Every structure is written in C-alpha cells, then in structure tokens.
Length: 153
Ligand SMILES: [Zn+2]
Image (cartoon, helix red, strand yellow):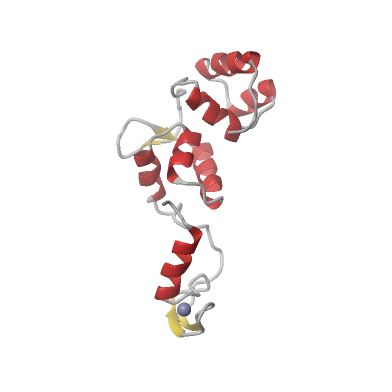
C-alpha cells in the first residue's frame, strides 16, 4: 500500500493489536491512520481483535463495529474493489459482500423527500417514472453507469 513501515512500527502495531488498543490509540502511537494500519495488520497476519460491539454477521464468526461500517462505506465510495476492501478490513470478500447487502449500506443516505413523479433521465433525456430525487437515470442508463464506474468487478 505504498507507505513504508519500520520494524519498530510493525512491532508496536503487533503489540497494540494483540492488547486490543483502540484505533485512535494505535494511530497516535504509530502515526498512521486505520486505513493504513488495518491492511498492514492483515499483511502481518495479526488476526482479529476482540470486538466488543456489533452483531454477528451471516457467517457468525466476525463482528462489525460502527467503525468498520464507516470504513467500509468510505472505501466503497472510493470505488475500491471488493478484494481491496476486504483486505483493508481484514475480512473475507464474502463477509464484505454480505455486509454490503445490509439495508442502509446499499446507498448513501439521502435526506431528500422521495416523490414519485415523471422526470427526465439525466443522460438520455427519456422521461421516466422516477421513485425519488435520487432516481434520475432510466434503466438502460443505470446499467451503463454502473458498468462505467466498474463497481465491485
Ligand atoms: Zn437514459
């Protein structure tokens, strides 16, 4: 992932990881953000930290904290691949995939009122029955847009 790690930083990360320090504490100690040290922890095969909050996922083995969800959402918006997201979170692709299917993580939250009415497709100007302000593409254009973004291979 580009940034360099000294032996001391690796050792500090491994020790704090094992002792279940928080992300903030680890960040303060090694001067790298969670988005950097989590993949590093995965590389070093440090295993998973104890997770006091969150609910078991479908596979019942791992827990998702609100921090994990926030990080997942952040990585997803950068259009990272599932594989890279899974690596960054120290989870399997399947676990990330099932988490992404959780309602509420599917799309960015929208506070706009959902009004069903006729609107023009933003791309081809076809008039469509739109389910709300966020629904501004006709179906063919939606498929095209998803493909163009290259989301989730
Ligand atoms: Zn269209």
